[in-house]
Length: 200
Image 1 (cartoon, rainbow, N blue to C red):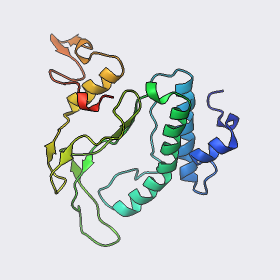
Image 2: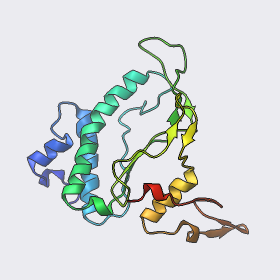
Image 3: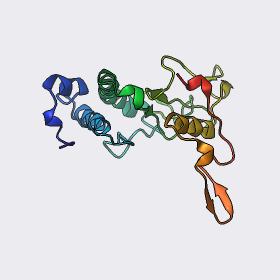
Image 4: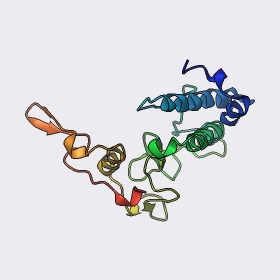
């Protein structure tokens, strides 16, 4: 039953892009609508991926060719998901995180041509967005230098990010510890601070 998105109204299906001319928008929209249906039924963790072909969001080359259409076909469905969650009163209790594996350099990788250029991995600074679930709305947290290379204000270490996400889920990251081979392990290792600036 949960996978039967045909049960939704035509206007809602249209808002998610299920009647869009581009089949890739339809496919991602169906995933986002299914995510809302799962959340609505009490599923606690839902992941939605956009991997419609072999290249995915990889940006080592063909940056414009790869990213411009992907942004276009995922924009409408993710906006519909956030709007739908909010209208149903689910966004307050649902933490939405949109991100990827890595940042990307702000300079080109490979031979630069107008048609084909890329960007390399860049672990120092990258962007994600968070919505709902106790996150402070309408803010930008963190800032890079004028080149987008180094963080110059409000750095967020991955351990701080994980500690904050766990806090938003009602968990104390320091209590999620397990012993293995004589050492105590947790997702935040021996670090991690909840970031009050991200909390509503």
